[in-house]
Image 1 (cartoon, rainbow, N blue to C red):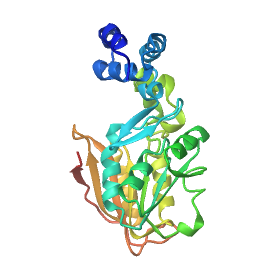
Image 2 (cartoon, rainbow, N blue to C red; image 1 turned 45 degrees about the vertical axis):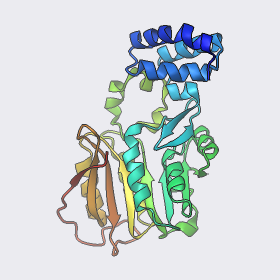
Image 3 (tube, rainbow, N blue to C red; image 1 turned 60 degrees about the horizontal axis):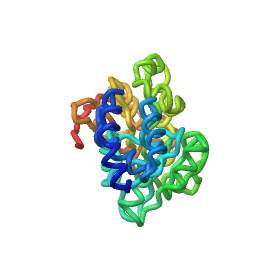
Length: 285
């Protein structure tokens, strides 16, 4: 905790500076930066300056709380968002005792860490392409295999995974310029760019999940915008059932959850004739 003099002398000024810089949670961020400075005014000034410059506060304070789990987040690593918490909670609810979960594109390991904490008897593994992010996830206690998507997963997990999750890149390439300036300037493009319509990686994961999931296993993907319909159509064609779209507090689609049908081919080809499907919009707030 910062000493009393630093807190009394600097807090109001820090709040004003952050507020003037456009930080919508200036009071909360000021308190976090003051705690991180640990009573050193020079450190505090540096942290405030960097935050005003757009650097993610999780990089400055060293971590973030995600679903009640304190996570270390290293500079340069994608910062877990609170908007992803409903997906993590749903995945934890679906993961059985002693089950198996795989989190692709794990980043700092947020979802994997939550699953491991929620179901201690489960085996939870994750994959990550970026070495810095993989090291960060390991520091958060996650069993990480480095490589692209499902490539590095242990082969003994084929057809054994109960829950497969991914917060993969899903921002359309042309929309990257519309992201907040701090996201554009600091966070890794690798974690954001989902191709022309944002669904390139989502579609690849949907297909690649089939050899890993057990019959009746669950796939949960974060998405956005109008991606729920095309992703849902693909999942239906691949043999997934019970599709649900999870909404955020504004009613906008944020994730999709689907269960692998028992007759689905491990090749990723449809096991049943593609048919119509209904997406149930579920608010998991």
